Amino acid sequence: MFGRKIPLFNLLGFKVWLDLSWFIIAVLVTWSLAEGFFPAYYENLSRPIYWWMGVFGALGLFASVVFHELSHSLVARGHGLHIKGITLFIFGGVAELEGEPRSPKSEFLIAIVGPISSLFLALAFYGVYQLSQELGWSQAIVGVAGYLAMINGLLAAFNLVPGFPLDGGRVLRSALWGWKGDLRWATRLVSRIGSGFGLFLILVGVVSIARGAFIAGFWQFLIGMFLRGAAQASYQQLLMRQGLEGEPVRRFMKSEPVTASSQLSVEQLVENYFYQYHFKMFPVVENGALIGYVSTHEVKEVPRSEWSQRTLAELVKPRSQDNTIGPEDDALKALAKMNRTGLSRLMVVERDQLVGIIALKDLLNFLSLRVELEEGSSGFFPLADQSEK
Image (cartoon, rainbow, N blue to C red; front, side):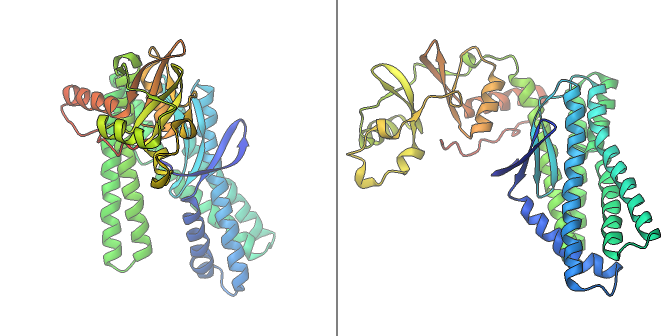
């Protein structure tokens, strides 16, 4: 979901990250508040005051989203789920849960606390708004408090829409899961509802743009696209977990992988390995021991004129926990490691010996076939670019 992330701080044991896309919404929110919202409701203030109100309004929205996601994280941790962190991005924030809730009750409690937290903030800021008016505080404080009360109320209402990946979709899934006892069926249904809601927002955005409301329509369109994609991705993630959980890496790995000596030149690697075997990554050995790997990514960093002089020993990426896995490890662990590191191949090591290679495309092919046979549809796991890193 995310690109490059910036670590911000730790809060109650959770890491809070900022995706670079968040800066887009931060600038747009500040600008729209300073140039549109606040001047429309609070007249006769200076332009610098409007901009300061815009800045504090955006910061208040930022803090509100963190509070919302923190509430999810705390309840999830209380129910035994590991949280990788909280990430803020262009469409808000997300608490990154590893795995699915263990029961419908856990799902319900983790989901419903989000809208409740936003409603709590809406009431709290509304109280500040009323108090500031009664005490005659400045219009700047009144305006920012009123805006934060309104936006948190809207966040609570929007998140109650019963479609994935919104909190309301998770609440509905918990009810369907408890009723049927089938998590996959419940997830498929609420994902379709979420996808339909996303399509509705896309159409509303197109109509708004056609009527001249370009900015509002543009954001409705983008949010609809995001929700539609996220709803489909949520179901795919569940299928991945259920399809690979309990399956050993040994089942998917290619045994007896082709290895390259650390003493080979880059030119020899290209001519005798890349062009001959058509793989994009090769394990590198030195005196029979695995020391790491070299991929097309490392080779591309070397000028063509130096290929005959440079050896693999100079380019090798050292063997580490990030690029190796055991043959009896869960295949789901391999997929998670690939997702975290961006690698599409892992070296399979047993008792310090290289015994195979596991590739992302093999895992996805298995999942696609399993879904086609069990779900009656294919195309859930399109193979992306398999370039090595």
